[in-house]
Every structure is written in C-alpha cells, then in structure tokens.
Length: 453
Figure 1 (cartoon, rainbow, N blue to C red):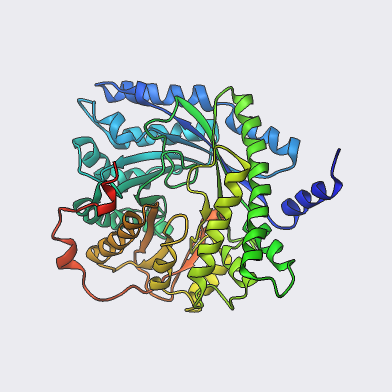
Figure 2: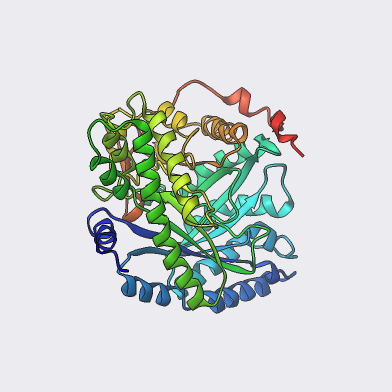
C-alpha cells in the first residue's frame, strides 16, 4: 500500500532540505592498461574509460528525471596511477594525467580521481615520479584529482613522504596562484584511505575491487537539521541520536535505490553506498547548522566535538541498517570552504585550527578545504599533516588533509572557488617551528594495536 506521508516526506527532503545524490562514481580498474610504452598506456587508458563510462552521465541524468532526485556529480575513480605508469621505459605521468583529463571531459564527468600513490611504508620509483609530477599535472588539467596515502594503522607514518607532500602542496598552490591555489584544493593526503570512496579528491579504485563498480555518495545535512528542529525542545541526547539514525536510514535507502538502478542500466556491479553528510555552500545545507539545531550557539563552541561524535556515529548506525553494502567514508564531513556555517564560524573566529583538528578525531575525514597563508613554511605544513596522520593511525580511522597555502594571501583574506568548492577565509596557523621534528624523516612506527593478527 502506498504511504502518502512517506512520499510527501521524501519530496520535502529534496525540495526544501537539499537531499541529493552527491555523486555517482564509476570505479574502474586500469591494471590491464600497463605497457612499457607510455603512449600505449595512454591509448589503453583512454579507450577503457570511454568504453565503460560513455553512458554514465546520460543514464544518471535519465534517472534524475525519472525519480526527481538531484544527482549533483558524476565521477570516475581509477587504479592508483603510480602503479600503471611505473612499468613504462619512458614514464611520463603528466602525459597520463592529460589523458585522464581528456577522457573525463569527453564522457562529461565532473572529476576523475586516482592520480594517486600508496606510500605509507615507502616509495617505489613510480611513486616518487608520480608525486613529483603532481603540481604540474594539477595545473594543466581541469577535472583531475590526486591523493596520496601517507600512513596507516598497520604501517605507521612515512615521515619522508609527509615532508615531501608539504613541498608538493605548496608548489601545486603556487602553480595555480591565479586561481587561489586550486591545484592544492584537488590534492589530499590520507591515513587509512578507503579503496571504495566515491568522494573527491580522494577517490580511487583500490586493490581487491572488481573490474568496475558503481559507488554512490548520498548527502543531506539539511534533512538532518530539519528533523532535529522538528523535535520537542526537551528531547534528550538519546532521542536526538535515534532521530538522526531514522533519517540516515531513509537517506541511505534513497541512495541505494538510485545506485542499483544506475548500475543495472550500465550493466556493472553495484559497489557501495557512502552516506556522508557532505555540505555545500548553499543556505541550509550545512553540517555546522546541525550543531546549532542541537543547541550549540555556533560551530566551534565547547561541545562541538561531542556533537560531531554523536552525529557521525548515528549516521553510520542508520546507514548500515539500510544497506548491506555501506562503505567509502560514511559519516559527517567538515570542509571549511564547502559549508556555509563553517565558513561563517571560521570568519568570525569561532572555529580555530586547533578546534578543527580536535573535531577530526571523530568526523569522517579530517582537515578539509582549509586556506592558510601562502608564506606558511613547508615544515609547518608537514607538522599539520603529521598530526592528522597520527589521529587516524591511533584511532584506526580514515583521516585526511586538504589544505591550501594561498600564494600572496594572509590571514583575513578570502579565497573564492565557486560551485561545491565554495569560499573560505585564510586561517592563521601556529607560528612555532616544527622543522627539526619533521626533518628527522624515517617512519613513525605503527601503534601496538596494529599487532592484532
């Protein structure tokens, strides 16, 4: 029997509270594209992406019209490219990057991820070549995204790679200084990166994944906020958590329906549903707004970390009940530039860098889309990355750093990217030196709980 109230509730979620399918991401293995000749590699990569993704955007748009559920981004994630390129006698990672970008453009997707390397325990020659090419690759492409996994709970933290990535981030920002350092906005450093993450800039097709799969990311912070605001004033924390779980269940069910329908049309396996409360700069689509609905004056107030912990946990619990294939990152994101409430909190000084770092111990990712002064030393950036990697390593969770040292700008200035990337104030960082510590190099050993076999 059709339940009219449920239909109306879903319509309200979409029309009034910004419920959407944030991304449908085609994960595609390129392991069969390996060759000694980089030109052959590029040809194979291009042809395979065209073969599998040529109908992705068209079919997604059809489903969007059929179900009246917005599908904001269509994306592709491929095998970490450091592996694909290192067999070449004449490796040219920038050339591969341009090929990926052209293929993405020709099939009409918004982003392509996987210009990546996994170096938590050390570098191969291909890893180093790819990492060195990142600044140029991101400067000469439009849709390409890059990620490097620097640490894991099993391997520890590769401090040589941390310091190297600090240098690469600064160079990526400098090469795109005419666009407020957007190169660095498409580059993320991970601890415990997820093989099936559909969200950029960190998506790639990991080992153990099938030849191809469709991974879906759903988002609805506005829906969660509205649900909390509809509760009685005296509702306690347990009641709040239960309400969030109920809403997360409904959001996940919606994403599962669309994801499975699209996978069937594309004739590929359905992968995972990633229920992540990923905000946008749009009014009412803010994770920070959820904190206010819970009773905090603003994001950054004492209690924000506790509120985020409860939110993240409830989202995961509700999502897992709606699908047997919840994966990716799933939880709550706190990107500064992409959340209207977080932008306001940072601009007013409510939200400090240290508070953001504390919040990353309980959120889904980490320090995300944060603009800092362009003259910040590389060693300070390395210290920031190392701290975040440590939080992920010790807590056995995914953490990340997507930070933008904006060339020519300082505290109080603003960067503007538009679209989902939004805008952000340039935030101050600690002036104390990290140089002697981060320059020791080597590898911070994995914690004792890594010995759990």
